[in-house]
Image (cartoon, rainbow, N blue to C red; front, side, top):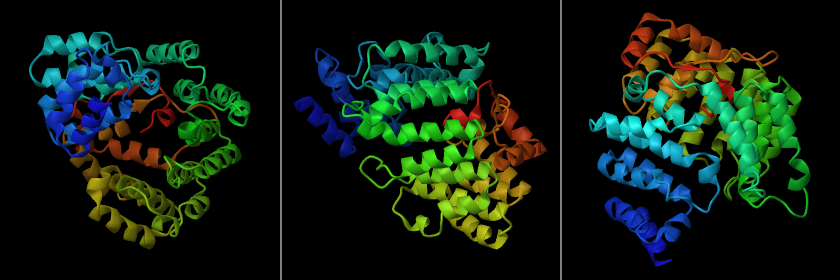
Length: 397
């Protein structure tokens, strides 16, 4: 307990060198103490170190997280292949230091979609890891792993959500719905899942996206609406409302999206990133329904806060039909090391949508703008287009 409290105090106090030192010390004969720590604290420290450009400290932390001895009691780290993601990130640090052999060794054992995509959207790692790994095979392996883990974590709703998400990646939304619906009885029983208090909104979220991919507008709407009624980490849920509005745009139901992400909704308390996401949905719905003046007003607002989510500026310009402005936004992001990965994700080549899946107008417009000469030039400089033979709708970006 004393070591855990020391870690919390150092992390919250932004004494990052001491926090990393404490994490390392907790592995030296005290592995149980570190494994008892919620892995979200470790990921939070990683993000803080990355944002502060403290590469050496981040490398030390990732070394701890990538080690086989780090096996948190919280199942999320295993379910999400946290070790694989840490190894991919550590490979990036090693390559940046010039340790190509170390980076290649770290990448050699990566098997999950989450870990492999960390590599693919890092241009330097992608070049070093040629030939490219088989992502379809990785998704199939993820599916087998999720099913195998049910014996280890029979009380985890998160694991069921992960299985359904992988089925969506593979273009199997109907199978994903079956998996999710099979859990409904226990969710409503007197013996719910152990992690249900935390993960129930995301069960609804996954069900909403599965119905969207299957072309079921009513099922999608009902799922996200139910999810939005469940608190999110003890706070009023805004994520499901924003996701519902975004999928309503995908179905070209712009009036519905405007009712979902209303002007009143924008007044709710949410993170800066969440606010940008909400503005993106409302702004695009306004633009696509012909309310250009109101959409332009929101564009001015998001441009003033662009650092909170640069992708929102791109999307709103796309929805307004401003191809030149959208292209310029993409070029800026592709040219910026910290923003490049997300821009590459937006411009990657994904599996063709399945039959019945709505054609998102934002994706159609993005594909058009991606062909502009200035975007193609910036893409080439950033390592080129990434091929992801999975469904974009299921990949969380």
